[in-house]
Image 1 (spheres, rainbow, N blue to C red):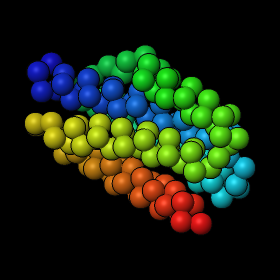
Image 2 (tube, rainbow, N blue to C red):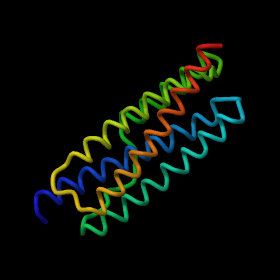
Image 3 (cartoon, rainbow, N blue to C red):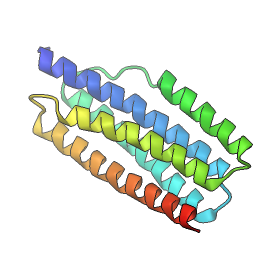
Length: 153
């Protein structure tokens, strides 16, 4: 396997873990809020990130690579524990939960930007990453807008 492909596959494997982090984070967020609309939104994002992980797995296989063991990152695990603690301390304050979701989305956004900047990305990989990033952009915007509206009230 050439160096470019190895770098791309390594980055895709990292993105899979990042998406598992987000999936589990949104799963926790569903439980940490009382607003049914937020619960529905977080559930949709949880399912979206699950799909992202599977799409990335398929792309790794298409590139002749090996998918690393399913799991989350240590940073993601710590972030989810922090979200749980913050939810408990803030009495499930939805603004605080949205802020933590925003922070997680920013990390994903940065990781996808980094992946999109890799040299010699195959067209299929580029299209998948571009699609995922566009959806992350949308979720980030929606989360920030909801948070701003809560602050304004």
